[in-house]
Image (tube, rainbow, N blue to C red; front, side):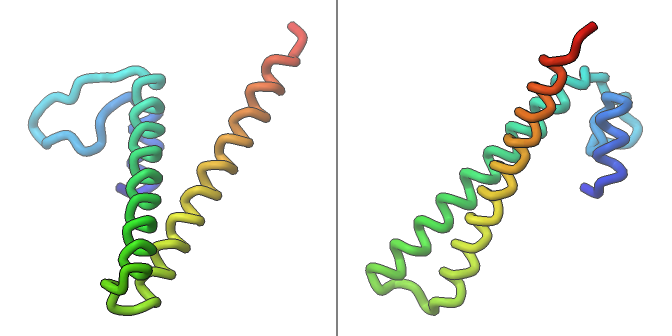
Amino acid sequence: MNIERLSASLLTGVNPTATPGIKPQKESLTEAFSGMVEQAMSNLNDKQLASDQAVESLAVGDADNLHTVMIRTSEAQLTLDLALQLRNKGLEAYNEVKNMQF
């Protein structure tokens, strides 16, 4: 899914992967965001598990090469770093809104 379709789906509340010819159900922006966060956390967990399995197979001696293990651990680290940065930015935005005076 590309960025344009994703942003359009967030703004309109329509599922961009819906089957053509079938009228998609509208979902709220909160539900769309919640689904994206859930999918991202699932992806993060999958990357971490793949990294753990690769390191374990290297330790046991089942890994074919070190290159694959390093790629998986780097992917897991980058995914975790991205998740932490998004969390930090979200908390900054929340605190900024919380401190606004109306």
